[in-house]
Length: 144
Image (cartoon, rainbow, N blue to C red; front, side):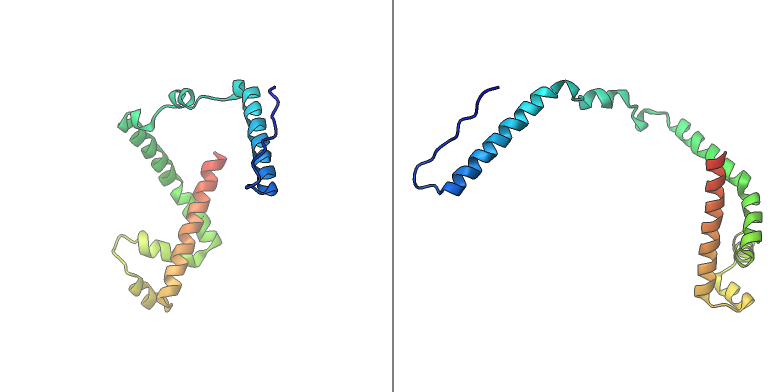
């Protein structure tokens, strides 16, 4: 360890600046010594990057097939999630069924007239029902 000598400036430099400068020199020296001690523990970024496969290097159809499998599993669980929704939130189930599963193109305006609700209430209930369905499906995926 090399000894750090206090650096004195001429009389033009105030004492508090001289002290602060020497403090910073000591701290810099300390940090350099710490770096030398722990140089063996450093990891080279390039080595880590080489060990991680690039997602772009994977064949496109493998990624698509994996996404397709996940989508199919979710569709398989959808009827069960709809039944759970029917039990927990019947108003939302009816709206989801009419809006998405009726086989016809239904508008929010039609649902407001049919159920006597405002458009904001219909949108809110649809949003809430979709969130509940998503929660049921995610819970199923995480448990299985």
